[in-house]
Length: 506
Image (tube, rainbow, N blue to C red):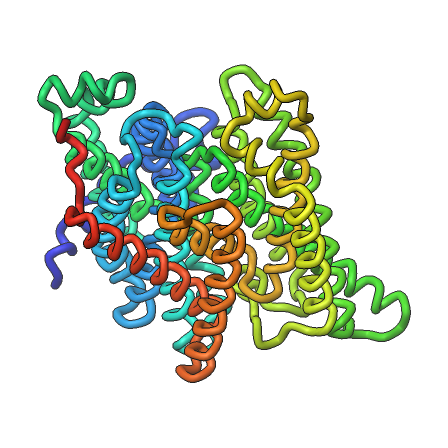
């Protein structure tokens, strides 16, 4: 008997007694009458309550992207628990990784110069990129672990999206413990968190330790993510917690939006091949339609994000979070609805750079040419708009074309990265190289030259290591890019002589 057995038995007994008490309540018979369905129902209600409580602080503190990063960061713990120790070890392993990720994320965001607790300003790109690196770095390690054990496409799908109807009594007990920890952290630090959210300088002057409050909030988010991971997976938890903002967050939302579009493209390719009497669609047709579907799906998702951002009470953060969740959920729904697909679901999520075809290479080349042309012709205006949008408008320049150009370049880059690194990992290649070089770059033009070279070198190293070690190449590329960013951050900290600046020091 393990130490958890008495608690599991207690929880199972309490749930059964609650079910029996509700069987006779009018309107609840369909829910309480089926024991296999009642346990998931209790899990959903529990997660909804705790996510709402923690989500209030996430919104007030502007910690939306940190929540998204932690959602992905627990993935390697979930994989390690399932692969090496069995299903019952998922929650303990995920909890360990979640606490490490929470501590690392807290230190990294402070080290990147973020003024914790305040809403992100236009200059907060360094912290945003650092958070994105934590997101993809941890997630890529999970991908590497999962695919290192052979063909785990079915298990990988379950780990990412969860299996709510298969929640066990032990899983419910583990979730209860994690949710209880989250509530305790919120209750103990509530006054400090609220003060921190509205006036970080005043909170520090009042004696609140800002770094400790950041760590407590990230730990509470991580606890909710761990409790929800076995039920709804790691990708769908964000709907309850994460509300994203700024360009990095916008980019991350669009990466998830390409997931359903890629699936629709593959389905259309299958229909075209069947209509032509070819049976199974060819690889080139699949590649072309995957890119077309991913690109076209970005258009309504971006329009939806823009429309939601105008709704009173939502804003760009909530809009991006909603779109991100819709993309993940819609992709999973379509993948199940159109089973069997000619491509495995993990190929959509993590890509397969060793299987790219001529269509994929041609698409990347076309986007590269367009991007170079746009930057070469309009780099001064784009940089002007990025650093001083008000001055850009005052100078008589139109902001619409600048925002449109950036949007098109971001979307095109995400789409052509899907065949190589999937729909989740592109954010690493987009954000990390520039973020690693930005603090030491002497000019925007130097950064425009150095970031692509660093990204290409990191991708090449990841490709060589992935092939040599027979691991996921896409995951290895993302891990190398994340490592490069972390090495650059550590080197700058060492040169300054202050590895971890204290956030609560005036």
